[in-house]
Amino acid sequence: MPKHILIMEDDVPLRTFFHQVLTHNNCDVAATGSRMDALYYIHNHDFDYLLFDIEVEDGNALDVIRECCEQGQNVIVITANEQYLTQCREMGVLAFVRKPVTATELIQLINSHGNPNNIRH
Image (cartoon, helix red, strand yellow):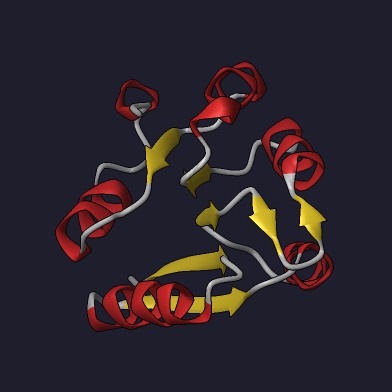
């Protein structure tokens, strides 16, 4: 059964890369570059994993990440901003990954089922 994944990444080439890699690996993927669109998707669809950047086109997404973690969603943060590592750990993200991310790493993140032991930087 395919995994349902939401990507929130404002860098269009990177978002396209994530989308292509995950789709090629039998995932159903929705993708956006904004907090507002991500919230729409979250409130109207069920996802197995949420792959989020923190700083996106319409602001800082820590509030969205916090809300999703509080609701028990499987959040994986992929960002270039290591300064958010402690906050993300405290919120309960499944993994914190620094960019750049390879296709292999992306697939491993999803296939590891977001094991909390995978939090790295």
